[in-house]
Structure formats: structure tokens, C-alpha cells
Image (cartoon, rainbow, N blue to C red; front, side):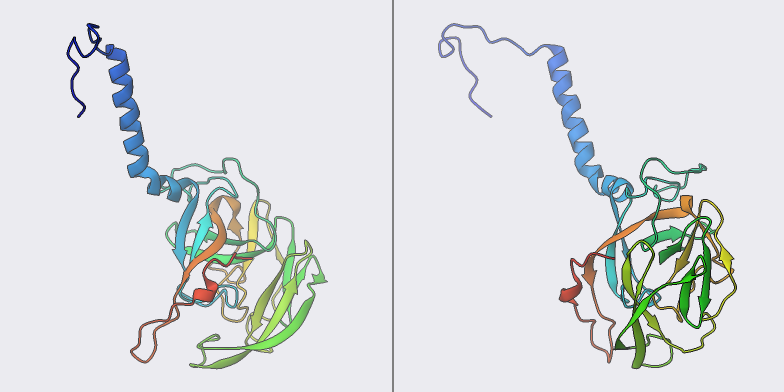
Length: 258
């Protein structure tokens, strides 16, 4: 505290008290600032970015088990599942619609389970798999063969597996890597899926080891059930093995999810 001035030190000027409204304004501003500081993590999580971890390998090689990602809540606007609670409302506030190639987090019909997949189909699209090749509106998506991926339990068949790796390109130019575990797997040949308006068709990048829109328990995803778009990997820890703790994968930290 500073020293209180006497009339002599103040040049015989009588100190003036602060008006009541000024004191009230100061306390109000301080209260608001305190609320912002204490509530900022919740505000960030609700309106900007929410952290998620990747517990399974359905999005390999784009996302690995042990990746921790930030999901943008504002890219597509705010819907009922972007809030900490789930208000009984439909539609989205502001933002844009998801596009083909976006990696998004969404909630299933049960209102509890969150999944992450890639958007390949929009309302009105015709989606089909033939011999492992993705067809959109009766047109095969071009793909380029890459060097095989070798990893642990990629297809669920053993500790170390060698898997075919491809680079697939969508009609809007979005390109990404996919894995093909089997030449003629269960999901490699499907019927034609016609995506309803206001819905999305989701696929995992690990095509033969992914529960996605090809499975009736998931099906088409309403746009309003999307939580947000995967933005960036902020932490990545390899799975522990041999009783040893998981290794930090520093090369993945800061990677933008595409």
C-alpha cells in the first residue's frame, strides 16, 4: 500500500473519494476478468478446440493409436454435440458444411459414442466399393501405390504386419493415404449407398479394419451430429510393449491432420 497523503504533503488539497459508480465498475470489471480466467479452459473447449485421443487404428496411417489431437469446434459452426451438454435442438449455428476429404469427429445415434473418420460422400452422392476401389457417383477414385506399411496389429492379425499402402485422390483434389489389408475383404465390395440430404458418408483410411458408414450400425451421419474437424496432433505416444512405457513420437507433434 502507498503512503496516505496528509493535507501538507498534498499541497493543502483535500483528497476526494471515488464516486460509488466508479468503485462498482472496478469491482464488476475485476469479477468479469476473474470469471474469464477461471472459465477460459471451458470456453476454449466449448467454442474453439477440444482434445481427443485416438484409441484404435481405423484411421491409420493418417492417425495412429496414441495420437492426441485438437478438434476445431468452429469450422462447421456449433451444433448440439459441440456443447458440454446436448440441448434438444437441431441444425448448426454459423460455420460451413463438411467437405469431401475432411477428417471429422462425430457422435453416433446413441448420443454417447464419438468416432473419427474421413468424409467421402455428401448428400446426393452415390458411394460404392469395388475390389477395394472407392467409387463416387459411378467414377473410380484414382489411387497410387506407395511403399508398404509395416506396423503392429494394423489389420488385427498379429504383432507385425506388412500392409499395402495407397494414395487416394477425391474429386475436389484432396489426397491422403489409405491401407488395404486384404485383396478381397468383406468391405472391398459393397452395394451402392445413396447419401440422403443433410448427411455424410464416412470411411476409415484403414479400409479393411474400420467400422464406418458401410456398417449398418453406423450408416449415414447427420451433419448436425458432427462435433468438429480434426486440426492438429499435439501429442503422440507409441503403444507400450514388453513392459516398457510408450515412446514419445516427437516427429508427429504439430502435424496438421489432412
